[in-house]
Image (spheres, rainbow, N blue to C red):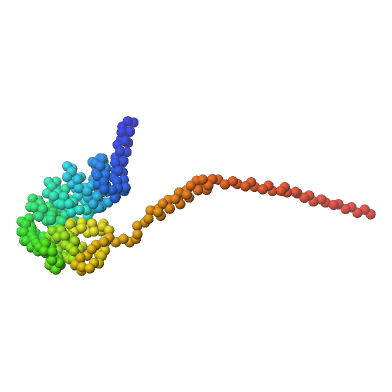
Length: 329
């Protein structure tokens, strides 16, 4: 009997902890403490249930999911760390810092964890993971996840890690030249020069993350044409940096350009579709609803008297009499 009670209490505690993850996801979507609440809820679970809880967190997507998953990348349990990486792939895009943290796991000694990191790098288009993947291929030439990730990121195939190294060396020189040209143009502040440097890079896969960081700077340029060209480049730029920028832009309130006297300056002001609601209307609604409830409780809910039924007059039964007539002779 005692053993059954202990087992029942353990199951109830496990179920309560599992529910804590779902409650935090449901009630705290906009809470700044959501990541901490999720971590506490996951840590309170038995080890066998933590990987499933991380998967549920990833399914919610968003930056808070990434913040809750990131600490588990450094877990002493490689199975749990790999589950966190897979959950981050579902939650993506989150932040570029999350992609950087996963990139470091490609060097992990645990093969399953490193494989999960390779899959994530290919999924998010992390071009900065290419040299890390080549280094892993040098250590593990037969690693299929590494080879598939390199093919997905580069569109190129090579016979060995040394061939990959040679390709990356020549590829890196061309990439560094393009990035340096764009950086110099942005530093000059000349609108025409920046515009001319951006246009050839639209949709460029080589050095996508470095290009995206420079385009983000150009997107804030006061010249409208430059900012527009940079935003167009970021809308098609691959890689985690541009993906996170696009996600942040969607989360921001809509903005519209305000025309000013100078053609080279575009002031951005928030768009308001309607005037803010007055608090007076809310109070009036509350008063009306409160009065209706009070009337129902005091008057409407009181039983009404029922009028007695009128008595029907008694029914008099008329008896028919028979008249007998006798004729005598």
